[in-house]
Length: 139
Image (cartoon, rainbow, N blue to C red; front, side, top):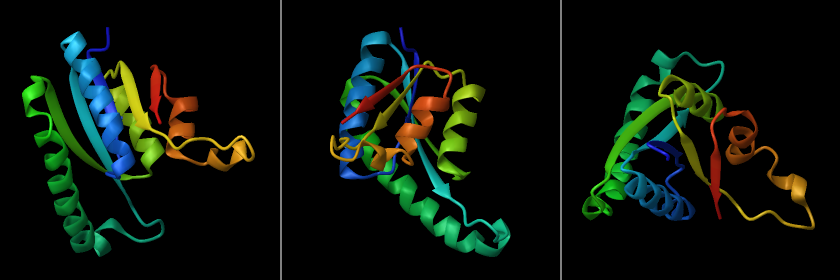
């Protein structure tokens, strides 16, 4: 059913559970998973001005993505790694449209019943509202 799954990740421990879920779903469907990390650019500063800083971040990100992928080499699922620059929610929306993504899997924090509005500014909330395809939140 879901042939191409996009998994935006902040590379936190919480996100590792979402990686496991996405790979399991892709394995069942014979699909692929694209792990995406968005390096948020500094607004008001030219990209070229920060290029060496961004290059160092990207190098670190790619190593961490590769470590996530290495944990699942026995799953027989194609896992792609991608690094983008910009505003995370906007990049997830752009890539999901450009690549014809079937499902976005996101790690999400647990919502407090005492303060449910606290998570409204999160990536999972923004993507959940705006992306055109189904979204699976993993808590």
